[in-house]
Image 1 (cartoon, rainbow, N blue to C red):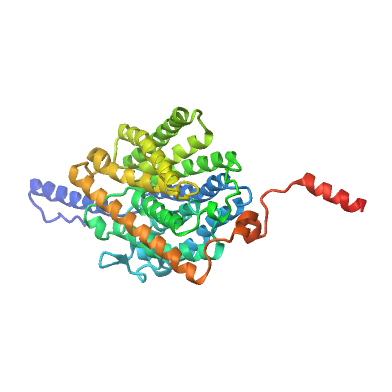
Image 2 (cartoon, rainbow, N blue to C red):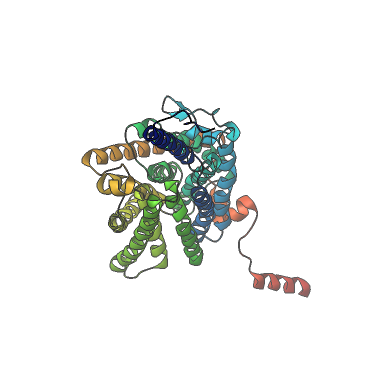
Length: 448
C-alpha cells in the first residue's frame, strides 16, 4: 500500500516522497561505505604476498654478501624468522600490536588471541580483519630478520632464536602499538607511513647494539677474509626486495587509492635515485662503480622513503633518494672508523636510513598526498623526538638481551667454528660441493 495514500496535497506528496527517497539513499550509502571493497581486499592480499617474498629476498641479499661457508646459516636465520614470528603473531602478537590498548603502551593479548574475532574488527574498514592481520604479520617477520646482517658469521642458532622471540615482544610489538595501534606516540602526532620507525629504526639500532655486545669477526680469527662470495645472489635479493617493497609501501595505504599510487611511485623514484647516486659516489671516491654499491644504494633509497612514501610528492621522493646516499655512506664510514663490525651495514642503511626518512616527513609531507599530514617545524620536532627515543630504547633492549642470553647460552660462536664456517659447524651442510675433488678422492681410493 502506498505510504502516501492519505496525503491529499500533491505538493506535500512530492515533498514527502523526495524526503523518503533521500533517507533510503543515505542508508544505502552508509551501509555500502561500511562494507568490504573487493578491489581493496584483492590489492592488500597481493601486497601481503609481495611483502612475504621480501624475507627470502633478504636471505639471498645477505647470503651473497657473506662467506660461502656461512651462506646457509644466514639464510636459515631469515627463514626461521618466517616460521617462529608467524606463530607468535597468530597466537598473541597481532593482539599485542592492535588489540585493546592497555594504557596506550601495549595491546591486550586477549583481544585477538589466536585471531579470535580478528576478521570482524579491521582497522581498515574496506578489507577483512584477517587480511589486515596477514599483511601486518609480514612486517613483524622481516623486522628481526633485518638484524641478521649485522651479526652475520658469528651467532649460534639457538640463542638467535631466543633473541628474536624476546626482541619482538620487548621492542617490535610495543613500538608497533605506540605508533600504528593507537598508542601514546600516535596520540602525540607521530607519523610513520610504512615502517621507518617501527621496522627500520628498531631493527637498525638493536642491530647496532648486538654489534657492540658481540666480539668482532676480526677478534674471532683475523686471518679469515670476509668478502662477498656471490654477487649475483646480492643482485637477485635486491630485485626481490625491490619488487616486494611496492607491496610494503604501496600496501600501507590499506586501499587501492591515490595514496597507494603516490607511495608506489615514490618508492621507485627514491630507490632509482639512490642507486644511481651511490654508483656515482663510489666512482668518485673509490675510483670505480660496483654492482654491490648499486644494490646497497637501492636498498638505502627504499628504506629511507618508507616512513614518508605516502606523505610526500614525487619530487620530494627524488630529493630523499639523493640525500640518503651521502648520509648512509657516511654512516658506513663511521662504523669502519670506529671498528664497529656491522657486517652488512644494517645500522647505516636501515637504521639511519629509516631515521632520515622519519625526519623527512616533517620536512616534505604535504596534505595533498597524505590527507592530513603537513610538514612544519613542529612536526619535524615530533618526528625527531620519536625516532631518537625509539632508537635509544631499541639499542638498550638489544644490548641487554644479548648480554642476558649469553649468561645462559653462549651467543657468539667460538674461533674454531668461525674459521671452519657456520654451515658445517652448526647445520652440518655445505652450500657448494667440488665435484672434481670428489672424483679425485674416488680415483685415489680405487687405486689403493
